[in-house]
Image 1 (cartoon, rainbow, N blue to C red):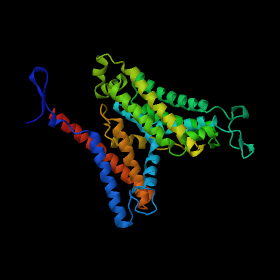
Image 2: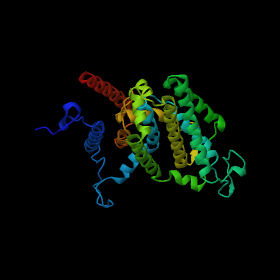
Image 3: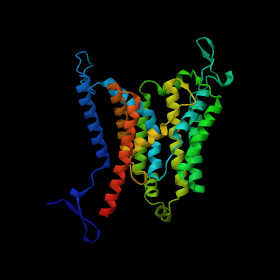
Length: 358
């Protein structure tokens, strides 16, 4: 007998008919991709993708080095994807994140430089010595301000002028990239202080990504901000009629996405110990792809941070797997494109199926 509970008007709920969580489907896809690379590795390279059978291994059968690489190489873009997830759930899109990363990295590194390099004045210094060796909090705050500012401009344009998000963020993408090139006349900015370099040292990008993912998962799931974000993405008119200040909330969502793009730029510049105008190129598309692969609906109103994190892992596995199989990088791009289109088609099919059932 089915397990049921009584509801209003004598309605019953069959626990066995609860929908399968979308994150579970994405996780199964991740496992299948891992198994595929494992099989290909054993077939064509006579080597395991995820396991280490070397007798000199460090106490575990897993290939810890490869697992670290998989997580590390998606962590910085993953931070951007956390913001992209919230924007898409609210019914929008943000194409400016990669350019905001480039601009923020340039501005941040300019105020994070050390005055002396190997006993000589910093050859890459952008400003005078009075702007060298500043406390690390100052460049970090400046970076966040740049990111939040860019996000707020996006949000204000979208919310109050009714410009389509695609157009508004496309304009910011071009403008921010131009501003990044203007900031240092196209020259790289290098040699940060030790305290700034520590932000992205080692596995710190993974720590930042994991911490922010947990934070925004809790925010989206348990706060009014999260409920309003889902409500606006599901039906903006209904959300407005229910008393939600849609314009203000949209501005906030884009500002948060800008802050996350800015912080990812800080971590990226710290990790690379330099900032260049081309930093963040195409990051916005990778971030959107991570979210879509993770089950975030491009039509808005559905998705989760957990799904996006699994989508990021799928990206990392594909990149690492193709490198492991010694296949050229352009194969990675082709496969990523197929997966993105497949994820969108699956999402459309799932929505049509749900509407027919309704």
